[in-house]
Length: 595
Image 1: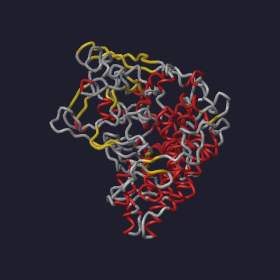
Image 2: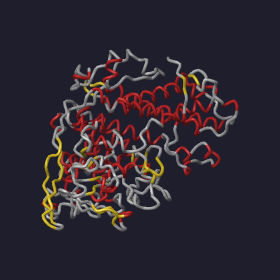
Image 3: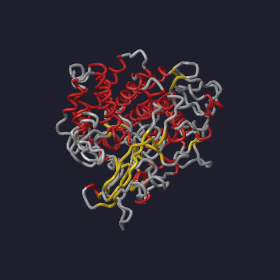
Image 4: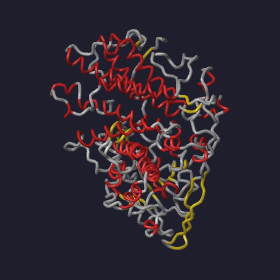
């Protein structure tokens, strides 16, 4: 094991005083040998790990990754994610190398804490009882963080190797520096899954079920327990991780024999999280399943696990608004995503009941109320706080100010509203910027996971096995408030229809609901791959809407291909730099030039 010199910026937030005995050695650092003499540094091993997590959706793990799917098109054609989507990603522009390094750095710190139980046996407080609260929490977090980082690695880099085997990534359970580990081999995909599950179970033994003050029975414990740990791992989050891991492991690409036990476990753990939110977290000012998502509240009750937040931030607004409204127009929604939204009666526009409401000359009229909280379209208005005066009107017709062409305008004639705070106008004398964070796991995600898995096991309407049917789980999402706080579907005859049609029809319906709910969160890229069994399912062209103005307020709308998807592999590559440095790694299939 390499004796690292450790300097943690995160530890500054833990120090409550500057006593001489806390001062660093003259070289300004601590080593892996002496950190155990400083309880703040031992805690810092865990605290630092949280700084490795994304804090917003404006990166290649968030909205940009949707630009490699049928949800979005990235405006800058030289962007690395866009180049990957069109089959032109060079080894010199790997957008995922940083995540490989980051995740293994996090695993190193957790392994350092866990090795020989040094972190658990460190003395943090003089009082035995309170010391036990702290060390138990940290021990549980260490296991949970290791599971989190390994799951992130597996989701990004797991895949079928050129040897034909389904491979994961190297599993490290000792504090080995990845920079020094040149002889490591990839473990199997199944071995990685089992290690993640084992770490989640270990974490659950140490962690409280959730960090809530109302769950802390001893009032004096709130100095070392309860909501002060909000945003850090707790027991229910490890259950959510297990639900997501089993859901992927159960999916066709990773479950060729359709092992139903995997679907069952995905449903079981997703339901456990749902039940906690609905039955335990449903307190005064707590969780309510009818409430829409508030993307600007880092304490939003629908969160299961989220990042630290960026206060007074306008990154998403800059990213999504066009240049005409002082944005960067970094990406735009596809017409394919727009068409995935049903009509205002809940029926798809291809269904006779939906077609009755659809007007091709006014295609954005009578749409699903969720659509208006996600997409800006031609002649849409950005209204202050969604109900006030119009701050901006979109003009996406040819030669309109928001039409494709300028690097600050979307290439699809759609701009994105999700994550955009509608109280911000850069023309105001006093700007109203709101917090932004990343909601890694939400209650809605668990509803979707449960519906997909429960449908595979019990079909759409059978509630006898889990106490809830797949149909009911989806109905929660379609009935709740939108992001703009408008009503969802009060009645939902189409949901009744697809549920009655059976498991296969309902499965396709759930996939579409998942697409709508999670768009621009960076999840569809992995969803499309776990669902698919061939590259043809991934290599479909994506569309824009060509708009011609014939006269005042009269437009001709014509969908047309804007970009093709060209994938030679269903998997991301092991970073080329690591392939050169670590001679025993096997590359994923389809990346012949990255060996």
